[in-house]
Length: 145
Image (cartoon, rainbow, N blue to C red; front, top):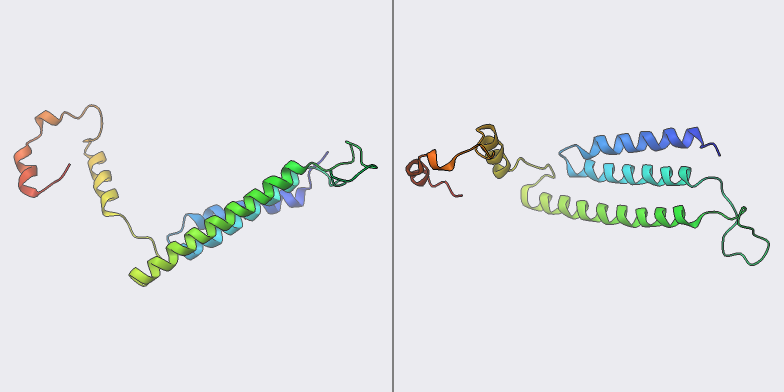
């Protein structure tokens, strides 16, 4: 069995474009990325399933060698449902973000920035000694732990 090179290339391009769009900040681009990624994976399942054959539920006439494998088809159907669910979820997030902020761009999280700053100061590592830190300064600034 030799896979169809065109379908392999199409699958690779769809997955690459989908991943590139998933890394964007705009949720509408993320939705397009999810759709492209899902379709790329579905094409990859079809390529991996091998040559087409006779339906496995046909009475008589179909031998085991001529039947198609139903497992890739079931996996494609499952992937379609998962992709549809992901698109619905991200679409709901984009709509809610548009209602609240007036745009669908994902903003930086303030808590994430604080965690990165603490990591850069090496406060989160095992070598950090909390006893040597001056707590009166933290209490005055209202820093919560």
